[in-house]
Every structure is written in C-alpha cells, then in structure tokens.
Amino acid sequence: MKNLGYKRVSSKKQKFIRQNATLDELKLDKIFVEKVSGKNRSRPELESLLAYMREGDHIYVHSIDRLARNALDLLTLVKEITQKKVSITFVKDNMTFNNKDDSHIKLQLTMLAAFAEFERNIAKSRQREAIEAILEHEKDFKREDKTFKGKPPLHKVYIDKIRELEDEGVTIAATVGKLKLSRTTVWKYRRKNR
Image (cartoon, rainbow, N blue to C red; front, side, top):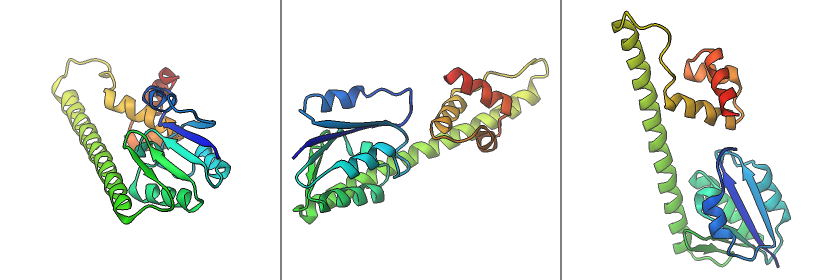
C-alpha cells in the first residue's frame, strides 16, 4: 500500500506553491508532477499515475480542479480510480472517495465539479468579451487619431492568450487565425515568453 500524490499546473511558468504547501506535509511514497493544461484527459503523468497505482494505494490531490477541468472527466477519473480499490483524497476540498462511497458524497463531488466548470466558462466568456472590446476600440482608435504613428502596444489579454495557446501546443499559424493577429506579432510575444 502506497501513498501517491498528483500535482498539476497549466503552464510552464506557473509554480506549485499552493500544492506543495498542501502535499509536502503528507508522507508520500511517489508524486506525479506535470505542467500541462487540464483541458484534456490524456496527460502523461496522469496516465503514469493510473498505470502505477495498485489496490490499497491512496492518492492525494490538492483540489478537484487539479485532477480535472470538467465534471465528466472528474467523475470518470474518480470512478476509474475507486473501481481499482484505490482511494483518492482532495485535500483542500476535504473529500475522500473509495469504492464504498455512498451516493451523497458522489452528488457533492458532481456539484463541486459542475460549479468549477461553470466558473471557468464564465471566465472564458469575460475574456472573449474583453478581446472583442479591445478589437473594437483599436479600430476606433486608428480611425479617430490621424496623428498616431506606429501600432499601439499589444493588450495584456492578447499576450496572455498567446501564452496560453503556446502552452497548449497550438501552432503559430493557428494562433494567428484564432486571434486575428499578424504572424510577426505572435512570434514576437512568443519569443518574449521564453
């Protein structure tokens, strides 16, 4: 029987500070760590953890959003883990699941996952609205200010989105298409990001 840990951040620049504070207090036999978006279920270290775990093991994760980004993935993963008679604890959420869980705990997990997904969707929607507002403002700015020379600096929303897409492995060409920016601009901000 082993105590296993799983840590995840979404990008290479992010740190594990909160997760370290939570999981370092525990005596873990092995920790699986990765810097990759939780958007996709197939993640190398997560797959390694699932292959490594054995009946009787216990997995510790800082919080539910570190394991999965949507309710369906979360429920599927927890079910897959507990069916192999492995327990999983989400330390921050103070929730533990095993193959003996009752329906009330599973309902609670479903609700937490759904709220987390809802919050992410709202954040994405606000980000899209901000980008659209910036694009509209830039059009007006260029039309109204005849004395302006050169291009205004790229707004932070664009810079963050370029970084996010790069971390997800999206090509420069695809980024150019999604954000309607020039290839040179995307390349310039990707270079700054390194």
